[in-house]
Image (cartoon, rainbow, N blue to C red):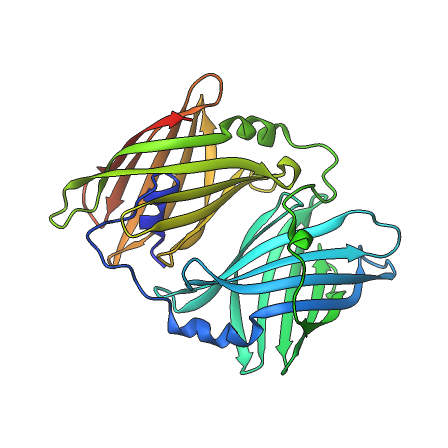
Length: 343
C-alpha cells in the first residue's frame, strides 16, 4: 500500500490516480484468505458487559475480493437475542502492506466507529488480531482469534476492561452457505446510536454529487497533470458514517472512503481504499469552514507528510481542495489543486 498517494486521491478528493504509472497487481500474499471467500451464516454467544450473561447471536456474512482484487471485503449483519431489536452491521477490508510486510484490516460499522488493526497468522489455519477503544472513560482491549476449517471458521473474542483480566466476550462458528440476500447488508439505520453527534450532523452538509477538475502531481517528468472525475458523498448507517465513492479516468480508478467521529481522539477518522491497493486511516479536523486532513507515511522509500484542505462554503458545500506534501528533506510542494462543482 502507498498511503501518501491515496491521500491525494481521497483527502484531496480527486478522482484520478497517477496516470504515468501502470496499475499495480494485487498482492499475492492475500491468497491466504481465498478459502474464506463466499457466503456464511453464524451462530454463537456474546457478553454485553463484564459479568453479564452470554446472549445468543446469529449472523450473515459475505466475503469477496474487492477493488480489483487488492482487498478481501467482509460484509456482516448480526442480530442478538435478549430482546435487542437492532442489527449490528459492519464492513471490513483486509489488505497487504508491502512497506511493513503486514496484513492490515480496516473496519467501519453502524455503531459510528471506525478502526484499523493488524492481522497475524499463528499457523496455516489461524490468524489473530487485537484492537482497543475507550468506553465510559475506560480502556477496553480485545483479542480476536479466527480458526479456519474446510467449510467453517470459528471465532473467539476476549476482552479486558480497565485493569481487569481478559474474559470471554464473543464466541461462535460460521458455516458456509450457498448465498445470503443482499438485503441483509443494508446501509440504513445505526446500532445503539440514539443521538447523532453534532460533529456528524455538520459533516452531513458535505453530501452531494460533485464534478471535480484540476491538476495533480504525477506526470512522467514530475509535472502537474490534468485530472477530472466525480465523487458521491452520502451519509450511511443512519448518518453515523459519511461514505464517499470516487470514480475517474484514466485507468478506471475507483475508491471508497468513510468518515466517522472519534470521541476518544476528539477528531474525525478517515478510512480509505482504492483499486490500486492503497488504503489507510488518518485524522481530519475542521478549521473554520474547511476540513483539514493530515497523514504521514512512506513514499518511494522516503518519509513523507501530507496536508490536504477540503474547502467548503458557509452551507457546507465542497468548492475545492488542495494538498501539499513534504518528502524526505525536500521543501513542501503543491501536489493537488482542484475545483468542485455540485451537480
